[in-house]
Length: 231
Image 1 (cartoon, rainbow, N blue to C red):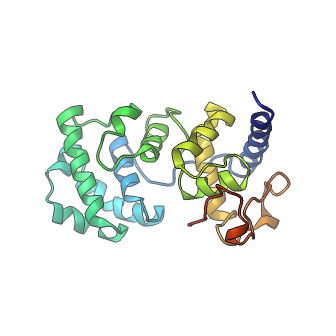
Image 2: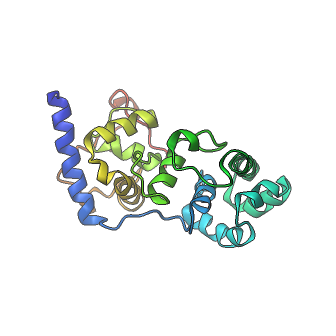
């Protein structure tokens, strides 16, 4: 292992320790009672707050209880049901076609396998990681959303901008048993403290170990490969 890798692993150890102190019980913020509900909620959460998704799914999950139900509903009806989550046409289409594939190929059940999950319409690796980690308690990877993307660079854990490359970097330095929790903890930290435009560094549990890469720097002064914060 190179000196740089050793340094990054030690940095990850410090970050994990700080996040454990601040967010020991970090968990999925989406409400669900089974893998299908979590899969649908995660699709709806794209470009939408978890709070809004939970409001919508409170009624949605009473109305649609199986993959067969989602596969059978008319496009316009489902669009109306998920309208307030934004991008409702694409989300409704993804949910319906995803459900049809579940019925046709998986006996209506959400698969427990990354390769099979990412074959489903509307399901990329991030969504599959959410489902596998939280519905099936399988540490398949680290969820990389906009907060994790930003904080991985800011904290010195990755120089990458592509989500899958960031995930690989995090998997190399964060213990596998922490992968699921770690993603949720970083998301919480990004929402509550390490904001994109005005991070609350003075109130941050990680202030002593954070290199603050990109914080306060004008765009031209950012290190090469630094991601632009987008929320």
